[in-house]
Length: 114
Image: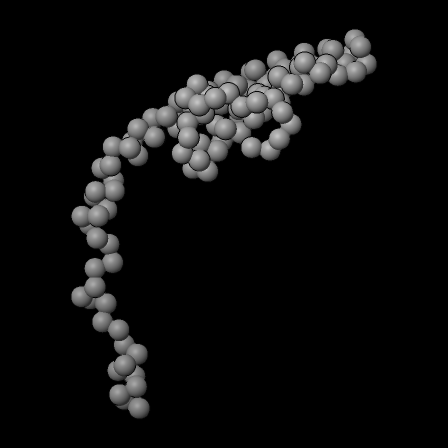
């Protein structure tokens, strides 16, 4: 029975769990820091875009208030704008590596999930 207990004991003192050279190389990769810069820039764009969103909401509300129906043109703009915001969120959350507009095409105004 003593032999079985000795087999269960694992000597972890000799194992190196974190390869410090690999960690250092990963930490110092220039691409990650450049991406951080772009993530901060697009976070700022997303923050500013909230003003544009409220402008679209206000214009659509005025149109509905006056005509009792929504504007198709404002709806198309709002769908394109929403898709652009989704582009930014996808980039910020590492869902995609492609930078949003103006580094890629502006998303279309078709009613589709990005």
